[in-house]
Length: 555
Image 1 (cartoon, rainbow, N blue to C red):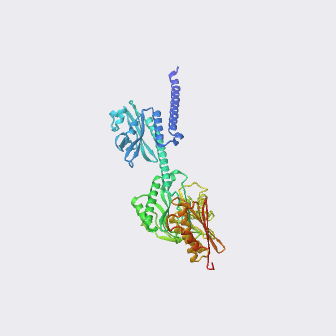
Image 2 (image 1 turned 60 degrees about the vertical axis):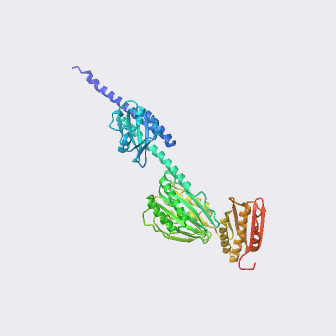
Image 3 (image 1 turned 45 degrees about the horizontal axis):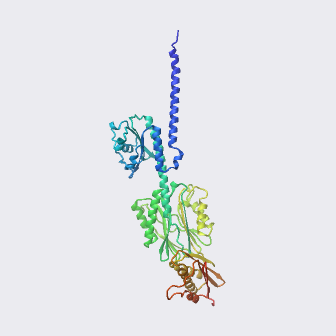
């Protein structure tokens, strides 16, 4: 019996069709992958946000074969969509088009977080409120939400000048593109915010520290390895007048723009309270109330006031790591007697104070927790490592800060900001060296420093007074005659030759004759109180050498 040839051919025909369909599907998948790669091109990472959106919209138009595309981003705390970039609808950006979430085509996409298709805007149940669509002759629209990390950031839509039935595959592709666009926009925006935060933070840190006789200071700020981790660490030194300075260091919880901004607010408020003469405990209590009223972030902080006449530091602590005292003999102690909750915790603000006197040669280190905290490591281990690093670091404050940070961050990626502030009382050994600005308000500091040095080396009260008076005259002459009203420095050195104390005052200015009457009495005063006085004037400056036998023996 004959067999129907069509029956035999049907399976072969169906197989060929399946192969063709599979090939077409593979080609479509490859094309889609290529389209997505164009959107996620690594080169886009080097564009700023405006350039990035312009390039992405151009590629979206090509990929979907449409005539217009636009990105609207959320503003006004999520209440409004604002046109930020457009292709074929450039006037939308130029005119500053905005639409409330929930209104119109874009507003509906944002409100529902779902794609919206309008085959014909003239016959659509979805109201189109942007007049530019009709001005440009747009007939069909497709839009998708832009979502990054579960958060809506805006809307992406495309349009056609001819009627078009957008298929499900078009919607799926645009949503995939939208997801990529959202990630790129959010990445770019976060990078911008991080750069702003880092710039803000650096602008709020002191550019220089005061130079005060008898006190050496140094500070360092090390940003986190990733820009997105830049936070709210800060330090500050405030000249309060009356031979007192304020010392502060703090750390705002969190990272990025919000943390850096709150850091600036706290630092400014702390400066204002400090300059009003508020003591450490009261200052932290005021800042705690300030943080609660602002309902902002939590922060830890230390604030202290150092008296440069008595070298007594009185400080209070708000949940911050303990300061570390390094003595001249190499022993260390964490100052743990102060307590108080961090700022912004809504806890009852109560911050007690601790006092410590900085002896000659002692250093006090303030730091933020990024220096000692490690994931998987006990806090006590970090504190022990800090003690070892401080003891084994160079004596110079600048070198000491650098060495401590380098040693404690050498084997790990810095995950959090690090700030350190170190103050060191000048040692009163046989030799003393200090540089001070050539200003009249610095004279009290040099008088007190020389009194301490003479007394530490066996001088009597009369010896202390004699050097204080004579050195003051020598420095005053350098300020008035050698420099005048300019920025310059005076170098003061002191040493012992047996029981003879030798103090030298050096400047780099050119001597000028006294101005006005009743002037020029400084040299006779110096001769009156010193056993010997030598003055060497050269083109490079003036050197004054004061000599006096000190102690209770005969002069």
